[in-house]
Length: 271
Image (cartoon, rainbow, N blue to C red; front, side):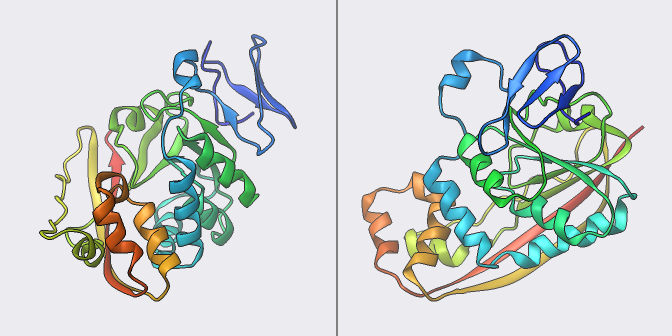
């Protein structure tokens, strides 16, 4: 049995080599990249959702360079320290799978991890990692998982669907969120904008959750190629929010220093 449930009847899905199937006979084929599409609205499924191919490719190449390895390592440490053996983990907004693949590969505990993202392009790239993490196209606001079915939800720079996260978490389960701190990528924004702004930090209070701990991470990136700078730029929302003139500013740069600052917030679901 997989961690996914049928989006039609909500029964458990059984995974085989080529498809997922529930006891009521609803079947969902796997793509050639291994993911399954559990996004039910035909109108929605015909439309491209989430990060596009250019953003996904840029993020994959940037992350695979090791630039954010210190964040991935910190997440691995937290999972090892707070989660039990054989914990079931949902990577909510898994993207191309950099963080869940890292946790799967580096943790000695036998975690069972699955990923959900609304972007088919992202899950295609995740499938190419061959990391052993099943993944599904679905909305974070309608997760294809049963009530109280996972021990942890990982939410890294992804939309917040805290009500759904609380639903699928076991009592006492953990929500591990990663958010950018105020000065994250300030050097990049200095290169783009005349008046760069600091990021706003959201309140740490979440209804139905107890904040267990926070961890602040600070790093500095030294990007010495135009390709790396472009990858960083294109994986952020700034690329899509700037005009041609500001995009051209970045295209002329072949060296960039910038902050990389994160906050990891670990919550426990209140019983």
